[in-house]
Image (tube, rainbow over all chains, first blue to last red; front, side, top):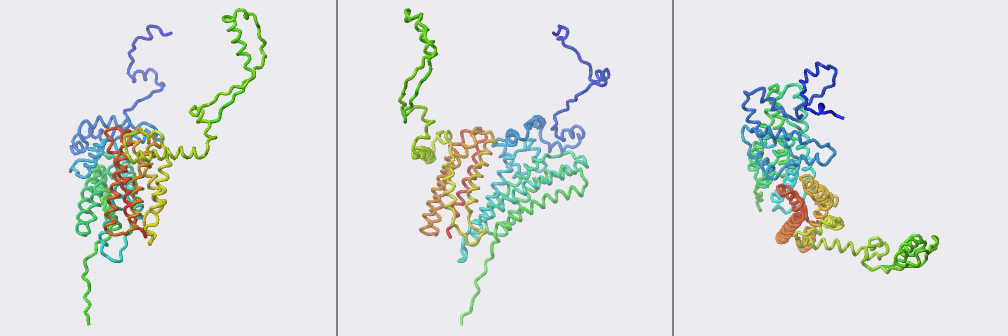
Length: 296
Length: 243
């Protein structure tokens, strides 16, 4: 039975004093929540970096990041774990799409819009829409290009849907995987201020592909110049989103490696666009005047 | 229904106990009568069972096969009618079944066969492709709505999405008939209008059934994949060109 003395509030000494009294006691140290993003350390250590502050968003992002850091606690074999990746509302998805289409110079897409709440809804459904848009637009544009010809028989070209799906999903998921692995490796060698989780990288790539959906629809227009202008324009927009996201992550590294990384990101992005244009959309043919056969 | 006959034998102890208890109050003269514990009681108690007794569920083994099949067919038919005139009723959701979606999917995939098979690579969708697109697409949409926090169950959602393919199957039938008459511009315009109308009908019907089970600020996120799903099926129907 506990006496009244035992139940009185007791002042405990410092951990240090207690430990000095009993050096062999087992101790437990409770750290701060695991998911404090590294940019918080940057705020304490390098107050001179205003760029980072701008890139890191406003003050309330602190709270959301701290709170968000504790939310993914369900084990990965439960359904609730995957529900945490779909914790977005309609207006949030629309905001993120808007942010990818109108990149604000100097603002980091991840910090501004994702804010430690990466979602898988956007990347998955934007990729699905892009696959079907490219297949349907390619089919339509081929139909219009070859329309007047007597030897042309319309085919739905359904095989191309599977090819489009494989290409686009591979790009949107394997390239982020490779990039994340590369950034983790460089992180272990050079202490980078900004680092992203795998899902955030997938998010950026997924949302940056959104601009290609209206571009693919406009590619139906059978003019070579129009198509290339559209391609360059959309490449600039989505490429700038990617560059502004990843430049802070590699900037502290060896100059040549940083530039090479960003150049590779842009090159792969351009390759995807050019490849889709070349494969799914037949080249619009030039008007050839019918040869005049002199009659004797 | 057959009547059940019950033969009772040997409930003597209960009867004896009740008898002596009752004798204490009702028949004072018999209070000291002791009844032997081993009197066998025999008889036949027939209870005519009406046709609406709950024992029906356990005796469907005895009903004619026609009744069994007609009951399921009527359930499927009732759901088709609900899709034709979509109101906010819960009949589709309550008793889900996947017979209707299977029949619709198979008939749609069969009707999409036989289209421009001149080159193996560029033809229309094969049977397996249509099947996979419909079922895999429905599963993905259901998973999507559950991950976004919807309260509908997995098979209920599959049931609704499958039954709402019915207007598009009707459109496919109409398209095939129109194509029998000719494949010119006029027939294309007719097909475009029919497929467009049926696509809108399918999307609105399935949204009417599924929208209530979603959290209110995510409704658009759930409706958009359904729109995409029926759009892809409509595209396959519209671009069907016979060989």
